[in-house]
Length: 325
Image (cartoon, rainbow, N blue to C red; front, side, top):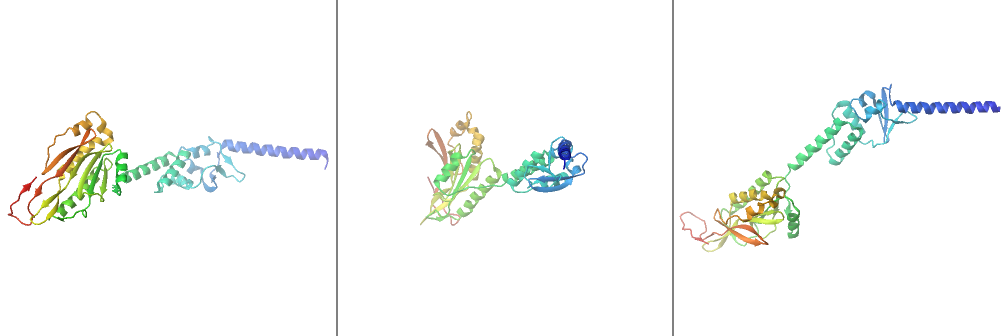
């Protein structure tokens, strides 16, 4: 081959290479204009769809189709997107149908949201946000009641909780005497009231159960990490030949103290007069109970104990009843 022929061949190859590069650059600059079908390689996951599907919403995918966004197209015509292809089929199905089932797992749902935000598919973004809000609403309606297993756990829980705390301590087996005839019913009523209060003030008050303590049935109310009030529901009945344990059900007083503890919600108890209004309350009592002010630092704890000791065995009517304080 002559030198002239060799030079001509090199010139032709250079021209073809230059034309190919120019065509590639032109292809990239024009995006997918004039195309009907699109081949997408998303992180190694291959998808075949139409320009019409990708252009249904104003998004990054639409801007790729109309040439507003530069894309990388390999030698086989695949549009290469440097993203994980795990949830891309879900994005495509949303563009096709306008709706798509979302994963229930919160982590996967968050991944779908991030992909929707990257591709700027606002309809799918809102769909994910609505699903997350629905999950949050369902979660918040679930009542979770911690069970105390140790004194240290109780102290840590109350000290770190930013909500008011109501604790019911009930341990029916912690008793050396027999129970009076109505004690079991009243103990059950206390437990039922606890469940009702949990449902009513869910999210506003932390309710805790303690089945390991010394008390048979006792309510404790905490605000800002300290005990504010206590309602003890047990007393000793001195029967004719034996002692018995009586469980009371001071429903009104328990409900009242639960409402009082709401003053510590969102740290409102720290405001002017908040603690003063509760701590300076009178020592009136109700339901045959006595309110004792115990000094804790410079603030009192309202302790309401049933002090009535009954000198009969409650076995029948017509018997004389003697009350001893």
